[in-house]
Image 1 (tube, rainbow, N blue to C red):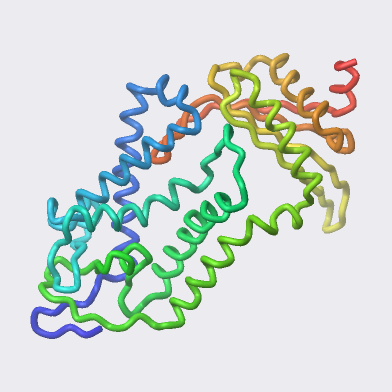
Image 2 (cartoon, rainbow, N blue to C red):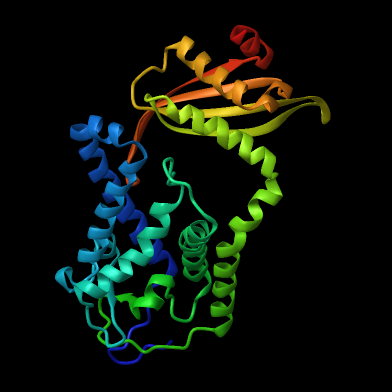
Length: 316
């Protein structure tokens, strides 16, 4: 892409990244302020608090990047860049809304837990496509699409991010190999959930999922995650000791971080539902209390460790 007369090249990679960082900080400050006044509400919302952050982000990028604010968010205004169409003009609100949706939805869905739904393969495939396919495509195009500097949301909305002095955009064709790579990412993301049980072991997943489901029956539990693993200690370059563990992370609706009996009760539930835990050297449990609305989070936590055999003996 060249620059002649009033034609100015698209903004640089680092200008866009800096603008995005500044916008993220602005949204984080807004989320922090909201958390001061609405902390109890956010805690009770649990996992669904992220939906609030999603809509705030969507509204922010939709309005600020549209003709309503000259195509500039706070971050873009600070680094003197703006969003325009192929004619160098600010885009409409509806077009900006679509562009913002493509950008924010994948990141908002990433890590979102659906505790009360029996998710089938088709839904998981679509969820993986939008989330992981979207994130990897956005990041890949941000870095490697050097001709037009358009990421996924720019390509789908036919927009460009240019310097504020730009009055006309002189476009170049996107390298076709980028489309092939992005398409490959989408295919892999869409079908990866079908192969995940085989890679991790279907029996293992079902046992852990059963234990996690039982934990969610407790009205105090907002979210639970269970992971198996091992850690190895080294001494002067030689293996000294390897320990296996079952890691349990539980988010709570109530502040019971210092309640050791409650923590032990949750650990016993997992061991009783998942007998494979008895083969581990230690059961690690982390209790967390707080909120996460996507654009801001505030957590307090406490860790406990138990020996699996002792948990079973106390059950008896």
